[in-house]
Amino acid sequence: MPNYDLHCHSTASDGLLAPAELVRRAAGNGVDILALTDHDEICGLAEARAQAQALGLRFIDGVEVSITWGGTTIHVVGLNLDPDDQQLQHGLHAIRQGRAERAKKMAEDLARAGIPGSLEGAYAYVENPNLIGRTHFARFLAEKRYVSDVKSAFQQYLVSGKPGYVPHQWATLEEALGYIKAGGGIAVLAHPGRYKLTRAEMRKFLGEFKDGGGAGIEVITSSHTPEQFLEYAILAREFGFLASRGSDFHGPGESRVDLGKLPDLAADLKPIWHDW
Ligand code: AMP
Ligand code: MN
Ligand code: MN
Ligand code: MN
Image (cartoon, rainbow, N blue to C red; front, side, top):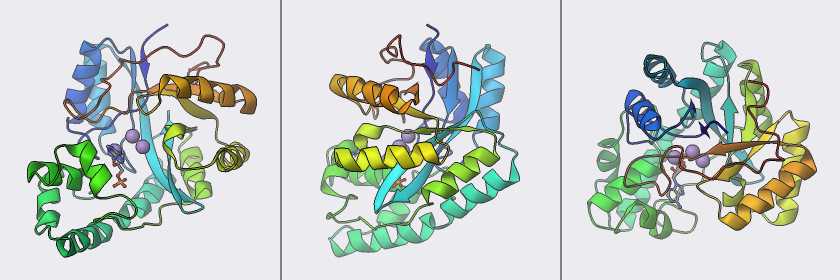
């Protein structure tokens, strides 16, 4: 089976490597087909594609769209889309709009908790000024030793009920599916095991996602345990979803799973790439 990695991040969002560096690392790791899926942003795709072409690696244009569904933040990956599509570009632009304001509020909340200077501190990690996110704050908190590492920052801060958390309204499911469809892409639910949804809520979401045109779910992702590989394979079969595989790599030393270093999809699952 060729090595597909269909989920990762560059400095165009909250990854640590520039798009071209990311592609070189993927090639070095034996990835055959790579999708770059930055959060709400496609400005890294051209650089990544050029580097992939130079290295003879197949490249898939992608994005990871933030949505709010019933109060829960959910991520939907769009794959094989046209980055020049105007409707897609405008939609993603609209989703990015709220990030700067949210960051200001996050910094104010951290300041109230006794942590000054986090806005400037977070922006020091931002390459794309349109895309400040929680990861940039997490890096600042780790740098200043408020926490031991980025992962711990998401346990003690930046999440619901902790300092630095600011609830945010992202796109609706319908909007996200509409943007991906406008760009001719295919919609995949990112890391389904990560959401704090009950089984019943997850099934409700999967039904709505499917009815709205969602085609696949990530079964093999760094967010899943081996038990969850099985659990989401079962749901993919039951709902008739195509199955995807992606590391969600953000950077060396920060991500547990490196580009392309994932188990294979179960042989009976229909892969998202079956007709590529
Ligand atoms: P944002 O879109 O700004 O809310 O940031 C979401 C990003 O934060 C995710 O894509 C991850 O990169 C990161 N993140 C969220 N939760 C965690 C966690 N528990 N550990 C590490 N990174 C996390
Ligand atoms: Mn991220
Ligand atoms: Mn995600
Ligand atoms: Mn991701």
